[in-house]
Length: 277
Image (cartoon, rainbow, N blue to C red; front, top):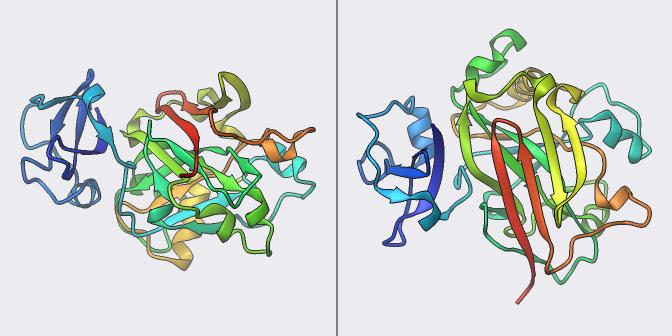
């Protein structure tokens, strides 16, 4: 089963379970107030699956619309480190996104008028399921609720205003997160799990998850030292090489483009780029 946040036909935010293109509305059943809260409660099914909606009829929300923390990791694939002219770091490079900077699968991403360097970054998102502090690597996967696709879309010019990356990473509605969360046990072996980013159908990034410099376990162990990880927190684990900013000539997204992030066994996230109103 897959897990989504979405707008009910009434327009109210809710969440549910997807099976074979059908959706069971868990919010309508009162199991919790949000997917984040249901994850914290153990997200056990209240009974047999019963369809309430067709997935294709729904407007999705970011998988976790209200995360307590969105911890993002930079420079976590060697080919991306190399294309930036840097060297591998002893510790993960960490920055943060706000919840307001997120958007959902199939929603248009508005290119801010303030940037001319609007870039794609396909990534794996790790959704925390169990709280913890100072989590050991051996226990780390036991704290994962599931995984999702993420596009850490970046305004590169704003990213470079200072040594802090935050401005380029936090324009409203630019962090695409979806379409759903798969359970922690659904992720294939990492050496067989490809992360692919496409721009207008052309592959621009591709790697397997075992190419991360800092693994899923490493990231959970490291971040849980400086902050208590809580259910519904999101760790966005870094992007492979091939970003538009490091190509010659550069390849930035423009209105009219379509960008996709696909991860084997996880899903396919698609967004159209449109001009700012």
